[in-house]
Length: 521
Ligand code: 16G
Ligand code: MG
Image (cartoon, rainbow, N blue to C red):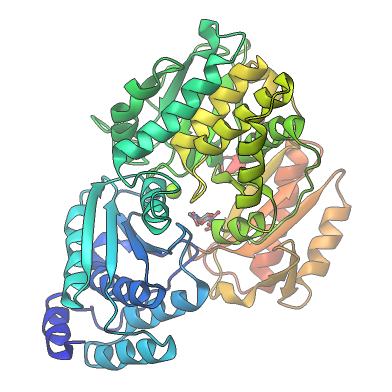
């Protein structure tokens, strides 16, 4: 480690003194102007992680669905997964070290993690379309090079595409080719093969309106479109030519406001979907004949996919985890086939190597019916991005399943009916006073809060309510559901008041929900 060079270059990416940031649920995220030092330091950290794991590590510059002025960064581990939790702590330490402590912190991390500094390091970098992203990714590169790491800058990529690249590179090409064409070809080939088998391939199944949140998804979908156009035609909206990133559009907006994005005209019963700003989330929706808006969120996507797989297989048990893709991903890895989705539209399916092998063998079987099912599964496996939830890949999976099963968007929506629900945010002085258990469904502290929630819930029919500290914003999240929208709104409001009183609320007392982040149906 050339400590002199590190000190010199670090001064060119100086940390605003006193600024403290946390490696949150999905990496660092804040106003772009506060992130230069974090980027440089994450370049350094990626080199150490690469040396330690003797693998390629990814660095993605994005703040997903946050406003355009924000930015963020996250590291991608060797199998395309989120960074290991112990290294999240190192990331936080390094990002918050004052200039004079940088050397010591780097040496500490190397010693604690037994990093062989002689080992080669390789880092791949991707970024979204935010105006600040290009310069910030250059700061990552500065960090990588000053520690002697090699790098490949993929430039503009969706987040899941970067996860895919990392996974491909660390599996010697077994998973796929680590190029953008490799990604397009792998997914499109599987998609076209699948949709060829659909008996009903009328026009209705073949066109889809896509709101790209004015982000990277638009660029990449446009590049990819002609690879799969045989099976699906997409019409792009909010493609970044006019509007602002994530502003009044995108998956997060549609999910939390329960309305269509601006800039998209929807005829009744047309199938539409929205990506988020870095294209790792997708939600679907449509207007019925009466002009009512219907959202099809991650829960229903998971239901569609798992019921499809179940028909080809046997049993599908359900588990819950804490919020955050990293928790879900690890849970899903415990099974031969794991399907996970968050209601916000982030998710994918994972298949164990043993299952993949079995399916490949069955695809060679003589018995016609079994061979067909196995072939279908083989293509489905290829179509999923197993490194991370991926809006483009999920979209193609969903479109293939709808075509194969001959389902309309309304029939899919009708698989079950959501209870009316409401989500609210509460401002408190320190959200860490709330701790939870049982996959964030019960509050342990502050004392009395869970009891208060239990009493409130008893007042309503078919009701549940949960509270948890957000992992990305300085707020407490409240979720409530009940037999009617009115009851769900009341319950959410009452629970917010309990949080405000018992967990140190600040600012204005929570107001009754009228147009908050809610989900009237
Ligand atoms: C991030 C997470 C998402 C989680 C959300 C929760 C990734 C890629 N994304 O967006 O999984 O649901 O944070 O945020 O990890 P919240 O705690 O503020 O509700
Ligand atoms: Mg995202």
